[in-house]
Length: 420
Image (cartoon, rainbow, N blue to C red; front, top):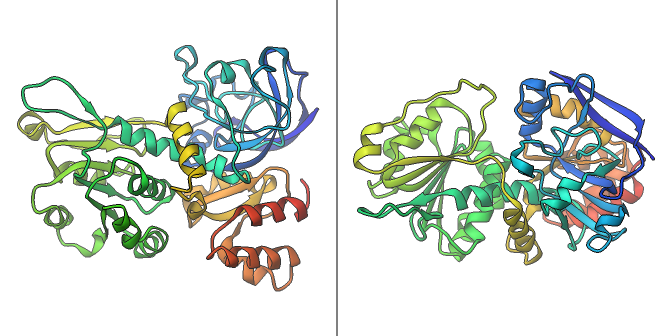
């Protein structure tokens, strides 16, 4: 079977190509990809090429398919897995396989599996590690977004706290405690806010900072303080550029005692050092944002580490349990992945969008790999709809859903957009 895919050959060398997939082996699965949500991690892989920890050294000779937040439909199942998977079933992928200790992952390391393709071959190790997950919900884009939601779920599970005189690490955030999410008005910050105010272990105070008022206004519209209050969380959005001393302002919001849990969503030294400065007793700093610079450093107060028991954790991705949890929360409508989607596009738009991802405004860019469509902001549907009937109808469907992307809009797009 032929596939069209965006493949990485080296630093900033992405190519949209059509090529023949080999016949599947008895322990493999053939599938079609429907949706892939672009991620900054892919941008980092593209800019670093073979220097990236997950990209193979021989990528120039054996290019890999990019994209790791994807969902689709199973087409053919090899004999080994026919007892568990069926043709026609929808799926989501947990790319963090951790197979035999390897960092190899779909979207970074493989020739024949990645999210930015029309058709893929799912290798045996994905099933061996239980990382091919059945998706029974509506549409496809929610399943794509279960991967970023699993990352934030894993982040919160990785926090830990202690009791004086005990060497036991109590895992998870402080329930009913004080939390700050710094640089949190981006897509992953939004997912974190959505998750933490709707999960079963919540803080009593959540302060979210950013340096862009426009971003804060957008996030607060989608995840309002009123919505958080329904779940017992006092949610405050703070623009730190308006504060002479952001650390003092943040501490004041915590009654001067500092925060139990602080998450950093931008690999920026002043943000990391601000997080350190606002930690309370036994405070846990989670460095979520992966830096592109392997020599990234920031100062940390070791006096407080010694006397106040402050500490650092870092997470990179979630695990399968985190993804199952995210899919379950979506099915129960506890979290709403549609709030993250600000743009849609086709497979043809993946290369330019990925290369320019840090400079494209908005949150998640949902790419539909079976169609030919320029990257388009939901906010631009009305204007495009003046001359294009496809966008005219999509605008109607988005407006019907309070300005958000929807399963209904996705279905119309897949049925009516030009095929790639």
